[in-house]
Length: 317
Ligand SMILES: Nc1nc2c(ncn2[C@@H]2O[C@H](COP(=O)(O)OP(=O)(O)O)[C@@H](O)[C@H]2O)c(=O)[nH]1
Ligand SMILES: [Mg+2]
Image 1 (cartoon, rainbow, N blue to C red):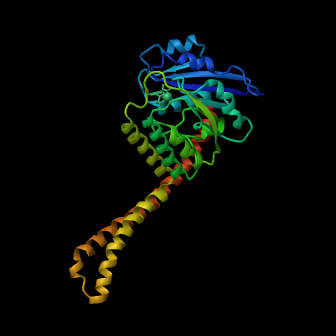
Image 2 (tube, protein in one colour):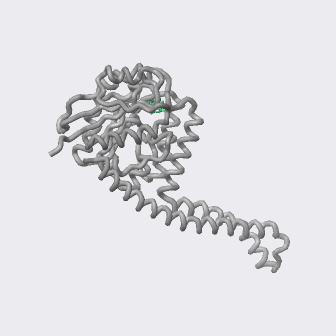
């Protein structure tokens, strides 16, 4: 039987100061795991991230020539880990905020066959320091993701996660910017069991690489969340929009109708009547769009299944 392998991937962008410590904290032995490989995906760092990673004993470094974004890097990390025939893949940030020693607890639900994905929850765990802005942003993003996914997580933004091989094969990250919510929404749609494990979150040394401005982050992350929802729930998305437009049309139409029934005249309410007609037509068109979007969605499911089988065949042995 081939050895049971754990890959720990670390996306890093100019993290020379912390990457060494992150790597050194990763356990080199865990019961039930035969082999542990540490992979750094260096996203076009212009400092000594690569060098420091090697000094700390990393097993593999993938370097991009230019910065490609965290989500792209994450996707590449999953692919590389699968190519190395990993059975479990852990993602940990390069800034040292998460503690690699907790990987043992993080992967336990997968080893116990209780989960396909494990989220290291900071909010169920212990937060040394998180600026107010981020606290609010995180809780807001978690609420939105929960609303769209219909489940109740405490921390959907965490960068400390574990994936089974099956989950890694199933998930297709589309965004370039952030993978955190997209992976959760997809996983739920694909019926991959997710559990949360409490983790420690330390104060960040140095400035955030990802979030320079909370508003621009919210905009980009929000757009990614909405697009993912649209892609995975096309029928519901467009029915909601179309239905809403038609409902407003009906509200205006009701006035016209009541007046017409009472007096037999439409003329005093002509603007309302025109508005009603326009809203009903537009709403109806969006409802029709829902049917087409649903067909495209079904197509996507078939394509994702093909991609899964291809990945399984080509990326894993
Ligand atoms: N690959 C890649 N990683 C990034 C990028 N920006 C941030 N990261 C990494 O993503 C992780 C989270 O970023 P961080 O700056 O800690 O974000 P924050 O903790 O949410 O403020 C860290 O390991 C960063 O090195 C990027 O553009 N590309
Ligand atoms: Mg961080």
